[in-house]
Length: 260
Ligand SMILES: O=C(O)CCC(=O)C(=O)O
Image (cartoon, rainbow, N blue to C red; front, side, top):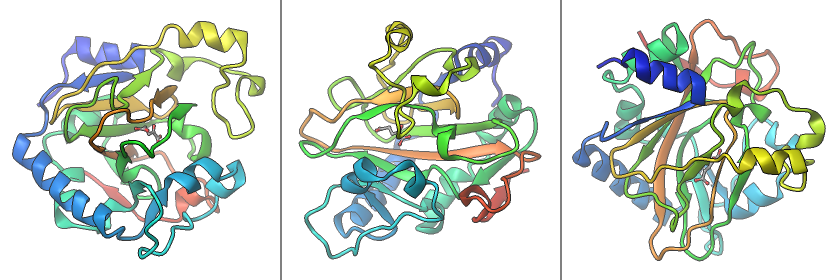
């Protein structure tokens, strides 16, 4: 399967692209069942809502998340980290051969999976989850260039009620000044210029099996989950194979999986 010229053009222009019904229902259900078991037992490494909210910019750049002991019950898990090594089903999804030609078209060269970053089951739990503010994923990543794309798989419906992703089209190509971001490098809503840009946001509800590809510099956010059920998604990141992580940074401290 490959992208049409129009799809490729849309990705380049907007910084994201929806691939409807890319994964079959059985794949999604299997991934979700395993994810639910890991979430139930808080199988480490995990990131909690508290850690997500409280971490400073410096802490985010450290080698690994602190994690909490898996027996601590009073936490809301925000994501299961390092899914590549958790279960063969997760690994197989990340190495899925059908998406490789698409990723190659977008990256302009063979894709390589980055274990260091988005390699997660991402959750939004009902009642206890928080909003994800406007940000660029690339803010804490350190590579020679920004040729990195995330692959987001909806394991169920994602909509305005449970916190579907929202994007600012074209923001991956824009140049921003440091004042447009707050101390944690979220895109500040206090800034008049930012508010005008935020007004151009786009959001597409997703169904089970839909994949969204988005550029590492695309501004995106998600609401808290106002429904009664968890929102559970799978996200991993690939880079162009020639794009090297900067030595000494978190980005260089994990293995990489080259896809042919
Ligand atoms: O909260 C979400 O569902 C989106 C998460 C996200 O954008 C991120 O962690 O980079």
